[in-house]
Length: 130
Image 1 (cartoon, rainbow, N blue to C red):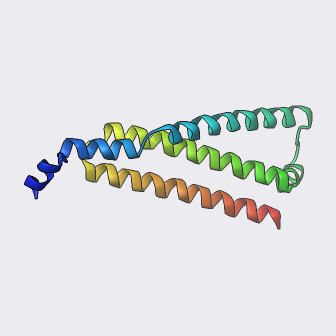
Image 2: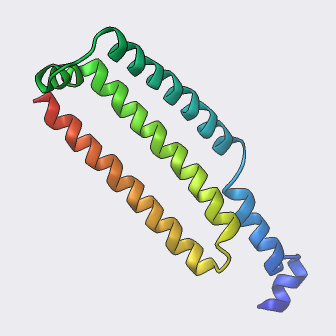
Image 3: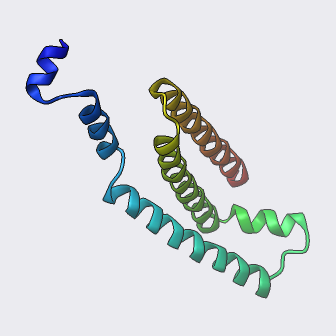
């Protein structure tokens, strides 16, 4: 098998390079940039909203967050945050977690953790709606 791999020019080094190229690139760069810009505008929106229309009690805050437009904006913010976190943490793990098994396990743990956070927030926002 190793002899066949050498004839094709497919060594362990070139295989790891192929894996590395597959997990990086322009798409990940765009996810990071677009999510960062959206999160910046969302935080500015929150500062503006709370600065000009302070919510002094829970019932006003609850009514504000329960509005569909605010809930959707929060949901998009969390999706952008989770995507931003995934790309950043994935890049760090791909660069610094050297044993492949450890890297796969850590990537799976990060993916499951981020997925769990996203589902948790979705449940919270759905409960606020009704």
